[in-house]
Length: 286
Image (cartoon, rainbow, N blue to C red; front, side, top):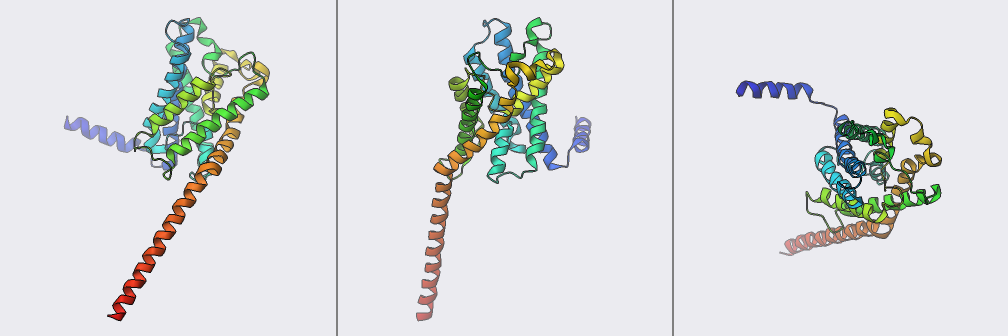
């Protein structure tokens, strides 16, 4: 037992990654893998079983809980963004350095790619496993590119606005450790209310990674040209939605709360200074 422990400790020391940013990127990769594996796995189960083992509700529940689990797994290391739009929003606010954005985007996309590969491997023996709609998002027949952009901007803005509220220390604070569950609930609500049009990607990595996988798995360039090059929408629109979400929250709530806190702190400092001066005056008089 002692020998095994020594071997495991030496192995852990040998494999430990010293570069902090790379560790964070790997955590994002694993968290996004979990998100896509469970989320797209629920889609695959519902589609391939003909609805007997899944429905629109179960898919949304799976994505909500998958987001929670992904954040729980990676949150302590990287913050559990799992979404380039979230990283982008935090960089806009100065809460994360911009050097993280391209690296996180790449590793989040890689994680989504690997998550799609896991789902593909699970159902490899079924011919319909190559239904590209299982992995990436595509529009309903009634949806135009313009409406799709609008849909993704609104969905992502809602996601970012809620995440900023959840993580804002000046707003109603969420008890420590419950943030992942709250974010998962937000994902669930967005899916239940906005999932009909195009599957609510609201996450460029979650869409791009599986889309690249399906291109390599047999569908080729069709995954990029289908529906008048639809793939541009879930990859680009969420970043615009992130900007809208940041502006919406900060202009309506965030900046005002920060100002109130600053004014309160300033008032407390002034009162403390007055108290010190009064004590000094009293001492001199004595």
